[in-house]
Amino acid sequence: DTGVSQNPRHKITKRGQNVTFRCDPISEHNRLYWYRQTLGQGPEFLTYFQNEAQLEKSRLLSDRFSAERPKGSFSTLEIQRTEQGDSAMYLCASSLDGGREKLFFGSGTQLSVL
Amino acid sequence: AQTVTQSQPEMSVQEAETVTLSCTYDTSESDYYLFWYKQPPSRQMILVIRQEAYKQQNATENRFSVNFQKAAKSFSLKISDSQLGDAAMYFCAYRSEMNSGNTPLVFGKGTRLSVIA
Picture 1 (cartoon, one colour):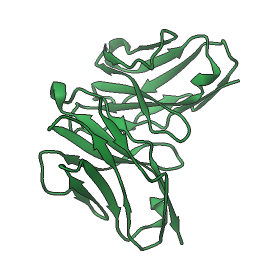
Picture 2: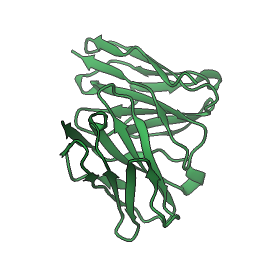
Picture 3: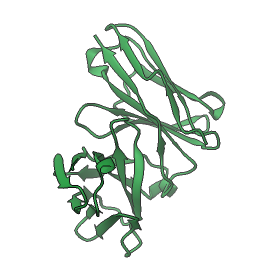
């Protein structure tokens, strides 16, 4: 169990550029979640996958955001035409199941849009 | 929609003392799960303790325990014998049991805990 891995750890980009983040969950976990955390706030749900199927998307996930999880393994989160309001920590988490199962979080990708 | 409220943005405690962090939530459901997560400066969220709503007994994990009051929709975290390593942001979180628990966690805004040596 090597934990949930996220890359890059930090990303600085100019407004209007596209960015992509990667998350590698714990290998046997079938559920993968993306959250966004801004300063002074708790994590806010963006989307989640069960295996390769994207089961739910928050209304926070505008059409500039897209997430994929090909083959039910790693996941990518892409933001197109970034805006300054996209600056946040993007957290990935995985779990074996829902319910009482605990989520294992990665260390996040800190995005700064200049 | 469910909401989670943490009314204490910051708390401090002397080393070896006890501190209680508050959390209330709003839901119309009867089956759900509650969690406390810790986020140290390293940013990685770590599960501290969890509680199933159908269990009357309060969960405990070593120095960490909860006071779960279902009728009052309250879920406080007590940290006993506080240690310097307990300093972190603490988030209360709720998960519905609807759809067999296939629902995302809803987090509060967090409480920053400082431990004074």
